[in-house]
Length: 457
Image 1 (cartoon, one colour):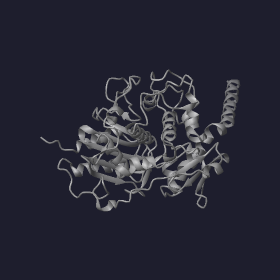
Image 2: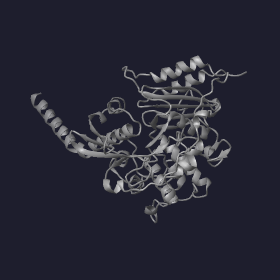
Image 3: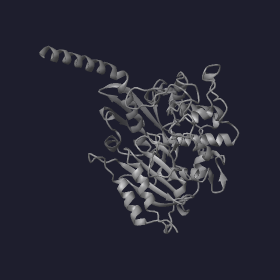
Image 4: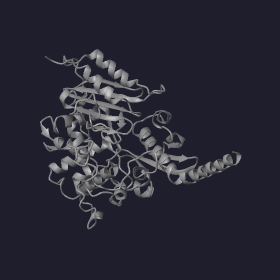
Protein backbone atom coordinates (compact mmCIF):
# COMPACT_ATOMS: atom_id res chain seq x y z
CA UNK A 1 0.00 0.00 0.00
CA UNK A 2 2.87 2.34 0.82
CA UNK A 3 4.40 1.77 -2.62
CA UNK A 4 1.02 2.35 -4.26
CA UNK A 5 0.57 5.59 -2.31
CA UNK A 6 4.01 6.80 -3.42
CA UNK A 7 3.26 5.83 -7.01
CA UNK A 8 -0.06 7.72 -7.02
CA UNK A 9 1.58 10.72 -5.33
CA UNK A 10 4.30 10.88 -8.00
CA UNK A 11 1.69 10.68 -10.76
CA UNK A 12 -0.32 13.51 -9.17
CA UNK A 13 2.79 15.68 -8.82
CA UNK A 14 3.68 15.08 -12.48
CA UNK A 15 0.12 15.97 -13.54
CA UNK A 16 0.23 19.17 -11.47
CA UNK A 17 3.61 20.14 -12.89
CA UNK A 18 2.41 19.52 -16.43
CA UNK A 19 -0.74 21.52 -15.78
CA UNK A 20 1.28 24.44 -14.38
CA UNK A 21 3.67 24.25 -17.33
CA UNK A 22 0.84 24.29 -19.88
CA UNK A 23 -1.45 26.81 -18.14
CA UNK A 24 0.60 29.95 -18.99
CA UNK A 25 0.16 29.13 -22.68
CA UNK A 26 -3.50 28.02 -22.61
CA UNK A 27 -5.57 29.00 -19.56
CA UNK A 28 -3.73 32.07 -18.25
CA UNK A 29 -4.05 34.10 -21.51
CA UNK A 30 -7.81 33.56 -21.40
CA UNK A 31 -7.98 34.76 -17.79
CA UNK A 32 -5.84 37.85 -18.33
CA UNK A 33 -7.40 38.67 -21.71
CA UNK A 34 -10.99 38.22 -20.55
CA UNK A 35 -10.36 40.24 -17.40
CA UNK A 36 -8.43 43.07 -19.05
CA UNK A 37 -11.00 43.53 -21.83
CA UNK A 38 -14.05 43.39 -19.60
CA UNK A 39 -12.53 45.51 -16.85
CA UNK A 40 -11.59 48.13 -19.45
CA UNK A 41 -15.14 48.35 -20.80
CA UNK A 42 -16.65 48.27 -17.32
CA UNK A 43 -14.50 51.14 -16.03
CA UNK A 44 -14.32 53.44 -19.05
CA UNK A 45 -17.63 52.70 -20.80
CA UNK A 46 -19.91 51.71 -17.93
CA UNK A 47 -18.13 53.94 -15.37
CA UNK A 48 -18.09 51.22 -12.72
CA UNK A 49 -15.80 50.79 -9.75
CA UNK A 50 -13.12 48.11 -10.40
CA UNK A 51 -13.81 46.46 -7.04
CA UNK A 52 -17.48 46.02 -7.99
CA UNK A 53 -16.47 44.48 -11.31
CA UNK A 54 -14.21 41.94 -9.63
CA UNK A 55 -16.88 41.02 -7.06
CA UNK A 56 -19.86 40.85 -9.39
CA UNK A 57 -18.47 39.88 -12.80
CA UNK A 58 -15.27 37.91 -12.28
CA UNK A 59 -16.11 34.32 -11.41
CA UNK A 60 -13.46 31.62 -10.92
CA UNK A 61 -10.96 31.24 -12.60
CA UNK A 62 -11.06 34.88 -13.84
CA UNK A 63 -10.79 35.86 -10.17
CA UNK A 64 -7.23 34.46 -10.19
CA UNK A 65 -6.10 37.36 -12.38
CA UNK A 66 -4.71 40.72 -11.38
CA UNK A 67 -6.01 43.72 -13.32
CA UNK A 68 -4.37 47.13 -13.20
CA UNK A 69 -6.40 50.13 -14.36
CA UNK A 70 -4.46 53.04 -15.87
CA UNK A 71 -6.78 56.06 -15.85
CA UNK A 72 -4.34 58.29 -17.73
CA UNK A 73 -3.82 55.79 -20.52
CA UNK A 74 -7.46 54.62 -20.52
CA UNK A 75 -6.27 51.03 -20.40
CA UNK A 76 -6.25 47.90 -18.27
CA UNK A 77 -3.44 45.36 -18.01
CA UNK A 78 -4.17 41.82 -16.85
CA UNK A 79 -1.81 39.12 -15.59
CA UNK A 80 -2.04 35.81 -13.74
CA UNK A 81 0.66 35.55 -11.07
CA UNK A 82 2.73 37.94 -13.15
CA UNK A 83 2.40 35.80 -16.29
CA UNK A 84 0.45 36.02 -19.59
CA UNK A 85 0.23 39.80 -19.71
CA UNK A 86 -2.65 41.20 -21.76
CA UNK A 87 -3.62 44.85 -22.30
CA UNK A 88 -6.92 46.40 -23.36
CA UNK A 89 -7.26 50.01 -24.49
CA UNK A 90 -10.31 52.26 -24.49
CA UNK A 91 -11.12 54.76 -27.24
CA UNK A 92 -13.98 57.24 -26.90
CA UNK A 93 -17.03 56.30 -29.01
CA UNK A 94 -15.27 53.09 -30.06
CA UNK A 95 -15.06 51.17 -26.79
CA UNK A 96 -12.42 48.74 -25.57
CA UNK A 97 -10.13 46.60 -27.67
CA UNK A 98 -7.85 43.80 -26.51
CA UNK A 99 -4.29 43.99 -27.84
CA UNK A 100 -2.99 40.63 -29.02
CA UNK A 101 -1.00 39.79 -32.14
CA UNK A 102 -1.41 43.25 -33.70
CA UNK A 103 0.86 45.93 -32.18
CA UNK A 104 -0.78 48.54 -29.96
CA UNK A 105 0.73 51.38 -32.00
CA UNK A 106 -0.95 49.99 -35.13
CA UNK A 107 -4.29 49.69 -33.38
CA UNK A 108 -4.12 53.24 -32.04
CA UNK A 109 -3.59 54.62 -35.56
CA UNK A 110 -6.91 53.23 -36.79
CA UNK A 111 -9.43 55.76 -38.12
CA UNK A 112 -13.18 55.45 -37.55
CA UNK A 113 -15.79 57.50 -39.40
CA UNK A 114 -18.81 57.41 -37.14
CA UNK A 115 -22.41 58.53 -37.52
CA UNK A 116 -23.66 61.13 -35.09
CA UNK A 117 -26.21 60.01 -32.51
CA UNK A 118 -29.77 61.21 -32.93
CA UNK A 119 -30.29 64.80 -31.75
CA UNK A 120 -33.91 64.19 -30.71
CA UNK A 121 -34.92 65.31 -27.21
CA UNK A 122 -36.31 62.05 -25.91
CA UNK A 123 -37.30 63.25 -22.42
CA UNK A 124 -40.62 64.69 -23.63
CA UNK A 125 -41.58 61.78 -25.89
CA UNK A 126 -43.24 58.60 -24.69
CA UNK A 127 -41.30 55.36 -24.93
CA UNK A 128 -40.37 53.84 -27.39
CA UNK A 129 -40.00 57.08 -29.37
CA UNK A 130 -38.58 58.74 -26.26
CA UNK A 131 -37.89 57.96 -22.60
CA UNK A 132 -41.02 59.29 -20.94
CA UNK A 133 -43.15 56.55 -19.38
CA UNK A 134 -46.94 56.60 -19.30
CA UNK A 135 -48.70 57.02 -15.97
CA UNK A 136 -51.45 54.52 -16.75
CA UNK A 137 -51.07 50.85 -17.62
CA UNK A 138 -53.20 48.54 -19.78
CA UNK A 139 -56.07 47.15 -17.72
CA UNK A 140 -54.84 43.58 -18.31
CA UNK A 141 -51.74 44.16 -16.19
CA UNK A 142 -51.84 43.12 -12.54
CA UNK A 143 -49.25 45.69 -11.49
CA UNK A 144 -48.84 44.50 -7.90
CA UNK A 145 -48.15 40.92 -8.96
CA UNK A 146 -45.88 41.99 -11.81
CA UNK A 147 -43.80 44.14 -9.46
CA UNK A 148 -43.40 41.12 -7.17
CA UNK A 149 -42.10 39.02 -10.07
CA UNK A 150 -39.63 41.71 -11.14
CA UNK A 151 -38.42 42.20 -7.56
CA UNK A 152 -37.98 38.45 -7.19
CA UNK A 153 -35.82 38.28 -10.31
CA UNK A 154 -33.81 41.31 -9.23
CA UNK A 155 -33.02 39.72 -5.85
CA UNK A 156 -32.77 36.08 -6.95
CA UNK A 157 -29.98 34.02 -5.40
CA UNK A 158 -28.54 30.65 -6.31
CA UNK A 159 -28.83 27.54 -4.16
CA UNK A 160 -25.91 28.46 -1.91
CA UNK A 161 -27.40 31.88 -1.19
CA UNK A 162 -25.05 33.91 -3.37
CA UNK A 163 -26.60 36.73 -5.43
CA UNK A 164 -27.06 36.28 -9.17
CA UNK A 165 -26.33 39.98 -9.73
CA UNK A 166 -29.28 40.85 -11.91
CA UNK A 167 -28.62 44.41 -13.06
CA UNK A 168 -31.76 45.18 -15.06
CA UNK A 169 -35.24 43.74 -15.56
CA UNK A 170 -37.69 45.30 -18.00
CA UNK A 171 -41.13 44.18 -19.17
CA UNK A 172 -42.85 45.54 -22.28
CA UNK A 173 -46.52 44.72 -22.87
CA UNK A 174 -48.27 45.71 -26.10
CA UNK A 175 -45.51 48.20 -26.90
CA UNK A 176 -45.44 49.86 -23.47
CA UNK A 177 -42.98 49.52 -20.59
CA UNK A 178 -45.07 48.15 -17.72
CA UNK A 179 -42.29 47.20 -15.28
CA UNK A 180 -38.66 48.20 -14.88
CA UNK A 181 -36.10 47.72 -12.12
CA UNK A 182 -32.34 48.01 -11.70
CA UNK A 183 -29.69 46.63 -9.41
CA UNK A 184 -27.51 48.85 -7.20
CA UNK A 185 -25.43 51.29 -9.26
CA UNK A 186 -27.50 50.92 -12.45
CA UNK A 187 -30.37 52.89 -13.96
CA UNK A 188 -32.25 53.36 -17.23
CA UNK A 189 -29.25 55.14 -18.79
CA UNK A 190 -26.68 52.48 -17.84
CA UNK A 191 -25.27 50.37 -20.65
CA UNK A 192 -24.84 46.62 -20.25
CA UNK A 193 -22.70 44.03 -21.99
CA UNK A 194 -25.01 41.86 -24.09
CA UNK A 195 -22.45 39.18 -24.98
CA UNK A 196 -24.04 36.95 -27.64
CA UNK A 197 -27.12 39.13 -27.98
CA UNK A 198 -24.71 40.89 -30.36
CA UNK A 199 -25.31 38.00 -32.76
CA UNK A 200 -28.96 38.94 -33.25
CA UNK A 201 -27.93 42.57 -33.76
CA UNK A 202 -25.51 41.37 -36.45
CA UNK A 203 -28.38 39.43 -38.05
CA UNK A 204 -30.44 42.64 -38.17
CA UNK A 205 -27.58 44.55 -39.84
CA UNK A 206 -27.31 41.69 -42.34
CA UNK A 207 -31.04 41.98 -43.01
CA UNK A 208 -30.69 45.68 -43.80
CA UNK A 209 -27.98 44.87 -46.35
CA UNK A 210 -30.26 42.25 -47.89
CA UNK A 211 -33.04 44.84 -48.12
CA UNK A 212 -30.63 47.21 -49.85
CA UNK A 213 -29.71 44.53 -52.38
CA UNK A 214 -26.09 44.26 -51.21
CA UNK A 215 -26.37 40.65 -50.01
CA UNK A 216 -28.35 37.51 -50.87
CA UNK A 217 -28.60 34.84 -48.18
CA UNK A 218 -28.57 31.89 -50.58
CA UNK A 219 -25.39 32.96 -52.36
CA UNK A 220 -21.89 31.85 -51.32
CA UNK A 221 -20.33 33.99 -48.60
CA UNK A 222 -17.92 36.46 -50.27
CA UNK A 223 -14.79 35.43 -48.36
CA UNK A 224 -11.65 35.81 -50.46
CA UNK A 225 -9.74 33.21 -48.45
CA UNK A 226 -12.34 30.57 -49.35
CA UNK A 227 -12.16 30.99 -53.11
CA UNK A 228 -11.39 27.71 -54.89
CA UNK A 229 -11.43 25.76 -51.60
CA UNK A 230 -13.87 23.29 -50.07
CA UNK A 231 -15.28 26.23 -48.07
CA UNK A 232 -16.36 28.18 -51.16
CA UNK A 233 -19.86 26.67 -51.00
CA UNK A 234 -20.60 28.13 -47.53
CA UNK A 235 -23.55 30.50 -47.98
CA UNK A 236 -24.65 33.55 -46.00
CA UNK A 237 -27.58 31.46 -44.77
CA UNK A 238 -25.17 28.78 -43.53
CA UNK A 239 -23.41 31.44 -41.45
CA UNK A 240 -26.69 32.87 -40.13
CA UNK A 241 -28.05 29.44 -39.20
CA UNK A 242 -24.76 28.21 -37.69
CA UNK A 243 -24.40 25.43 -40.26
CA UNK A 244 -21.20 26.57 -41.99
CA UNK A 245 -19.47 23.28 -41.17
CA UNK A 246 -16.35 25.08 -39.87
CA UNK A 247 -14.55 23.13 -37.15
CA UNK A 248 -15.15 25.67 -34.36
CA UNK A 249 -15.56 24.72 -30.69
CA UNK A 250 -17.77 27.07 -28.66
CA UNK A 251 -16.54 26.13 -25.17
CA UNK A 252 -15.57 28.69 -22.54
CA UNK A 253 -14.09 26.82 -19.59
CA UNK A 254 -11.21 25.07 -21.33
CA UNK A 255 -8.97 25.74 -24.35
CA UNK A 256 -11.21 26.12 -27.41
CA UNK A 257 -11.70 27.93 -30.70
CA UNK A 258 -13.94 30.50 -28.99
CA UNK A 259 -11.38 31.32 -26.29
CA UNK A 260 -8.54 31.48 -28.80
CA UNK A 261 -10.52 33.78 -31.10
CA UNK A 262 -11.84 36.16 -28.44
CA UNK A 263 -8.79 36.47 -26.20
CA UNK A 264 -5.74 35.68 -28.36
CA UNK A 265 -6.47 36.84 -31.92
CA UNK A 266 -6.42 40.41 -33.18
CA UNK A 267 -8.27 39.48 -36.37
CA UNK A 268 -11.07 37.19 -35.24
CA UNK A 269 -12.63 36.73 -38.67
CA UNK A 270 -9.32 35.73 -40.28
CA UNK A 271 -8.74 33.16 -37.55
CA UNK A 272 -12.17 31.60 -38.09
CA UNK A 273 -11.85 31.70 -41.88
CA UNK A 274 -8.63 29.66 -41.60
CA UNK A 275 -10.31 26.75 -39.81
CA UNK A 276 -10.95 23.54 -41.70
CA UNK A 277 -14.35 22.08 -42.45
CA UNK A 278 -15.60 19.57 -39.93
CA UNK A 279 -18.81 18.86 -41.87
CA UNK A 280 -20.21 19.69 -45.30
CA UNK A 281 -21.89 23.12 -45.21
CA UNK A 282 -25.57 23.04 -44.30
CA UNK A 283 -25.58 19.57 -42.75
CA UNK A 284 -24.78 20.07 -39.04
CA UNK A 285 -25.83 22.77 -36.56
CA UNK A 286 -22.82 23.99 -34.57
CA UNK A 287 -23.24 27.16 -32.52
CA UNK A 288 -20.21 29.33 -33.29
CA UNK A 289 -19.19 32.87 -32.46
CA UNK A 290 -16.69 32.47 -35.28
CA UNK A 291 -19.45 32.32 -37.92
CA UNK A 292 -20.76 35.67 -36.69
CA UNK A 293 -17.38 37.36 -36.85
CA UNK A 294 -16.90 36.09 -40.40
CA UNK A 295 -20.27 37.72 -41.13
CA UNK A 296 -19.03 40.94 -39.50
CA UNK A 297 -16.01 40.93 -41.77
CA UNK A 298 -18.22 40.38 -44.83
CA UNK A 299 -20.31 43.37 -43.78
CA UNK A 300 -17.13 45.43 -43.42
CA UNK A 301 -15.90 44.44 -46.87
CA UNK A 302 -19.25 45.33 -48.44
CA UNK A 303 -19.59 48.71 -46.74
CA UNK A 304 -15.98 49.88 -46.91
CA UNK A 305 -15.57 53.39 -45.46
CA UNK A 306 -19.23 53.42 -44.39
CA UNK A 307 -18.79 50.39 -42.13
CA UNK A 308 -18.60 52.14 -38.76
CA UNK A 309 -21.33 54.70 -39.45
CA UNK A 310 -23.79 52.21 -40.96
CA UNK A 311 -25.16 50.44 -37.84
CA UNK A 312 -26.00 53.68 -36.05
CA UNK A 313 -27.37 55.48 -39.10
CA UNK A 314 -29.40 52.60 -40.56
CA UNK A 315 -30.47 50.80 -37.39
CA UNK A 316 -29.81 52.29 -33.95
CA UNK A 317 -30.79 55.91 -34.64
CA UNK A 318 -33.90 54.79 -36.50
CA UNK A 319 -35.23 52.90 -33.47
CA UNK A 320 -34.18 55.64 -31.01
CA UNK A 321 -31.59 53.29 -29.48
CA UNK A 322 -28.66 55.68 -29.22
CA UNK A 323 -26.79 53.85 -26.46
CA UNK A 324 -25.84 50.89 -28.70
CA UNK A 325 -22.13 50.31 -29.22
CA UNK A 326 -20.37 47.34 -30.83
CA UNK A 327 -16.67 47.21 -29.98
CA UNK A 328 -14.01 46.27 -32.58
CA UNK A 329 -11.22 43.73 -32.41
CA UNK A 330 -7.62 44.83 -32.97
CA UNK A 331 -8.03 44.54 -36.75
CA UNK A 332 -10.92 47.02 -36.66
CA UNK A 333 -13.74 44.55 -37.36
CA UNK A 334 -16.70 44.91 -35.02
CA UNK A 335 -16.97 41.88 -32.74
CA UNK A 336 -20.49 41.06 -33.86
CA UNK A 337 -20.49 37.84 -31.88
CA UNK A 338 -20.00 39.21 -28.42
CA UNK A 339 -19.08 42.82 -27.61
CA UNK A 340 -22.30 44.85 -27.74
CA UNK A 341 -23.36 47.38 -25.11
CA UNK A 342 -26.71 49.13 -24.72
CA UNK A 343 -29.20 50.23 -22.08
CA UNK A 344 -32.01 47.91 -21.01
CA UNK A 345 -34.52 50.22 -22.70
CA UNK A 346 -32.57 50.12 -25.95
CA UNK A 347 -32.34 46.34 -25.87
CA UNK A 348 -36.12 46.38 -25.43
CA UNK A 349 -36.45 48.73 -28.43
CA UNK A 350 -34.45 46.25 -30.49
CA UNK A 351 -36.81 43.50 -29.34
CA UNK A 352 -39.77 45.69 -30.30
CA UNK A 353 -38.35 46.10 -33.81
CA UNK A 354 -38.44 42.31 -34.22
CA UNK A 355 -41.85 42.09 -32.54
CA UNK A 356 -43.15 44.52 -35.17
CA UNK A 357 -41.63 42.46 -38.03
CA UNK A 358 -38.82 44.92 -38.72
CA UNK A 359 -41.11 47.96 -38.90
CA UNK A 360 -40.52 51.05 -36.78
CA UNK A 361 -43.09 53.84 -36.64
CA UNK A 362 -44.15 53.11 -40.21
CA UNK A 363 -40.68 52.61 -41.69
CA UNK A 364 -39.75 49.09 -42.81
CA UNK A 365 -36.16 48.91 -41.56
CA UNK A 366 -35.69 45.17 -42.13
CA UNK A 367 -37.11 43.27 -45.10
CA UNK A 368 -40.78 42.61 -44.33
CA UNK A 369 -40.10 38.87 -44.40
CA UNK A 370 -36.84 38.98 -42.43
CA UNK A 371 -38.18 38.26 -38.94
CA UNK A 372 -40.35 35.43 -40.28
CA UNK A 373 -37.30 33.87 -41.92
CA UNK A 374 -35.16 34.57 -38.87
CA UNK A 375 -37.32 32.38 -36.64
CA UNK A 376 -37.37 29.34 -38.93
CA UNK A 377 -35.00 26.57 -37.75
CA UNK A 378 -32.61 24.88 -40.11
CA UNK A 379 -33.28 21.29 -41.10
CA UNK A 380 -29.78 20.59 -39.76
CA UNK A 381 -30.91 21.60 -36.25
CA UNK A 382 -32.76 18.60 -34.73
CA UNK A 383 -33.81 20.58 -31.63
CA UNK A 384 -35.18 23.41 -33.78
CA UNK A 385 -33.71 25.99 -31.43
CA UNK A 386 -32.06 28.41 -33.84
CA UNK A 387 -32.90 30.68 -36.75
CA UNK A 388 -30.80 33.58 -38.09
CA UNK A 389 -28.47 34.25 -35.13
CA UNK A 390 -31.66 34.07 -33.04
CA UNK A 391 -32.77 31.47 -30.48
CA UNK A 392 -36.16 29.73 -30.64
CA UNK A 393 -38.26 27.90 -28.05
CA UNK A 394 -37.61 24.62 -29.82
CA UNK A 395 -37.46 21.13 -28.40
CA UNK A 396 -36.17 19.85 -25.06
CA UNK A 397 -33.29 17.41 -24.67
CA UNK A 398 -35.55 14.44 -25.44
CA UNK A 399 -37.13 16.16 -28.47
CA UNK A 400 -40.51 15.53 -26.84
CA UNK A 401 -41.43 18.99 -25.58
CA UNK A 402 -40.57 22.68 -25.68
CA UNK A 403 -37.19 23.94 -24.49
CA UNK A 404 -38.92 26.30 -22.03
CA UNK A 405 -42.01 24.28 -21.13
CA UNK A 406 -44.00 27.17 -19.62
CA UNK A 407 -43.26 29.62 -22.43
CA UNK A 408 -45.36 29.79 -25.61
CA UNK A 409 -44.03 27.95 -28.64
CA UNK A 410 -43.83 31.19 -30.64
CA UNK A 411 -41.29 32.75 -28.28
CA UNK A 412 -37.89 33.63 -29.76
CA UNK A 413 -35.01 35.49 -28.18
CA UNK A 414 -31.55 37.00 -28.21
CA UNK A 415 -29.37 35.35 -25.60
CA UNK A 416 -25.95 36.16 -24.17
CA UNK A 417 -23.48 34.51 -21.81
CA UNK A 418 -24.40 34.51 -18.10
CA UNK A 419 -28.04 35.39 -18.67
CA UNK A 420 -28.44 38.37 -21.00
CA UNK A 421 -31.80 37.97 -22.71
CA UNK A 422 -34.40 39.69 -24.84
CA UNK A 423 -37.44 37.38 -24.91
CA UNK A 424 -40.00 38.20 -27.62
CA UNK A 425 -43.39 36.52 -27.15
CA UNK A 426 -45.84 37.68 -29.85
CA UNK A 427 -48.80 35.61 -28.62
CA UNK A 428 -48.61 37.32 -25.21
CA UNK A 429 -47.68 40.80 -26.57
CA UNK A 430 -44.58 40.63 -24.39
CA UNK A 431 -40.92 41.58 -24.58
CA UNK A 432 -38.83 40.70 -21.51
CA UNK A 433 -35.31 41.95 -20.89
CA UNK A 434 -33.05 40.56 -18.18
CA UNK A 435 -29.39 41.53 -17.79
CA UNK A 436 -26.95 40.27 -15.17
CA UNK A 437 -23.87 38.16 -14.50
CA UNK A 438 -25.35 34.82 -13.45
CA UNK A 439 -28.02 32.71 -15.12
CA UNK A 440 -31.50 32.85 -13.57
CA UNK A 441 -34.45 30.46 -13.93
CA UNK A 442 -35.74 31.88 -17.20
CA UNK A 443 -38.63 29.45 -17.48
CA UNK A 444 -39.97 30.62 -14.12
CA UNK A 445 -39.40 34.28 -15.04
CA UNK A 446 -41.36 33.95 -18.28
CA UNK A 447 -44.11 31.86 -16.66
CA UNK A 448 -44.57 34.22 -13.74
CA UNK A 449 -44.74 37.34 -15.92
CA UNK A 450 -47.37 35.75 -18.16
CA UNK A 451 -49.45 34.91 -15.07
CA UNK A 452 -49.66 38.61 -14.18
CA UNK A 453 -51.55 39.42 -17.38
CA UNK A 454 -55.31 39.20 -16.91
CA UNK A 455 -56.91 37.53 -19.89
CA UNK A 456 -59.71 39.47 -21.56
CA UNK A 457 -63.01 37.67 -22.13
